[in-house]
Length: 214
Image (cartoon, rainbow, N blue to C red; front, side, top):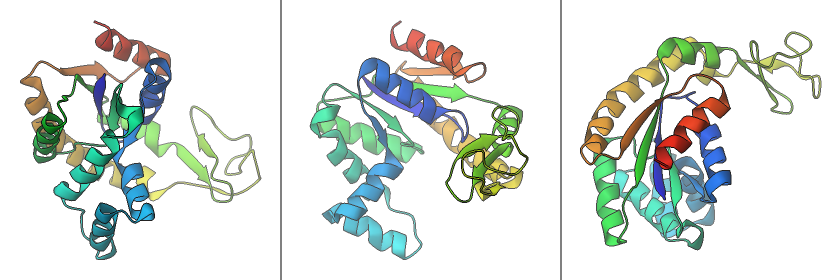
């Protein structure tokens, strides 16, 4: 089972990916993670990617695709995988399809976790992180016992720049623009499924499972 998870920042893709991994025993392939690993391991493509990153530029699609292709050839991906964070654009989706064909493979399902802007704002702006130990809290869902103080180590809690409303709005708009084309691309082959990303984590996971086992 080869899956792509789509959804705006804060939709809960990472949480759902972990649950899918546990139930179906397939790895979560995070673009950011494998890119960092390729750079750390100093693979030929990793060295190439680092040159762009050091110059403050975006890593070209062909380099990212090459790194992903290498990852998907590893033994733990033989039974399937979940692509998290890729593709982001139609050009990347087309390049991915082309490379998968070379591997005699294709994507089985594309699942979009649909969450509206107001819900994302509620989820993300309430997040707080400890400066000292990195423990995470949420003002509504998992508040600290003392306001602004970490329960675990007593460190100061702060709001990351990524969780500020102006940043969330920009990221959400970029995602909307990119995802409209992606949804159209994957809808053509009948493998695109959109589910509402509201309710409990278990509720959302049940929706994902119903798609995968339909």
